[in-house]
Image 1 (tube, rainbow, N blue to C red):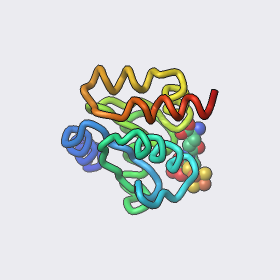
Image 2 (image 1 turned 90 degrees about the vertical axis):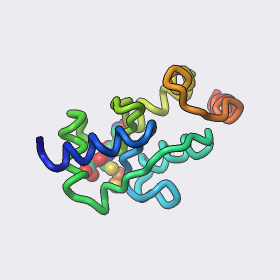
Image 3 (image 1 turned 135 degrees about the vertical axis):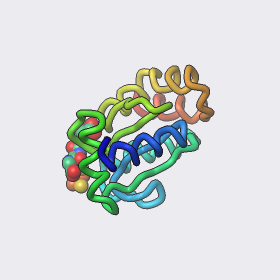
Image 4 (image 1 turned 120 degrees about the vertical axis):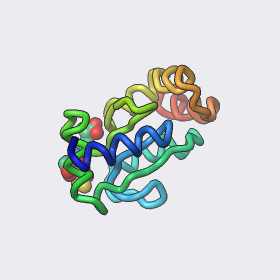
Length: 120
Ligand SMILES: N[C@@H](CCC(=O)N[C@@H](CS)C(=O)NCC(=O)O)C(=O)O
Ligand code: FES
């Protein structure tokens, strides 16, 4: 197992929700990362952020891990869920709520509804 893979395994086992992103949840450094972090922040999801810009090995390693070419990447219970487009779609369709509920991840349902109302 590569070092990057074992580090990723460890991180996504240690927290139920992990976002690999550019920048931090407080200060995203790309619009795509900012959009996903913004949704999770607004929905009050407790998650671990990993700044790939601070770690070249993880920036490449996370793409190999999921076989997905871009950042951001959201993981729930160790499983890759998607990037910005997928998370945006899932937020608007309500699928994200369902997925969080199925995985026992707490979030603010009313906040999720407000996002949907604002984008209706
Ligand atoms: N359509 C993508 C947008 C994300 C994207 O295009 N990310 C690019 C630019 S930030 C990326 O990660 N490129 C590879 C890299 O910078 O390492 C999504 O849904 O997440
Ligand atoms: S850093 Fe340029 S699009 Fe993400």
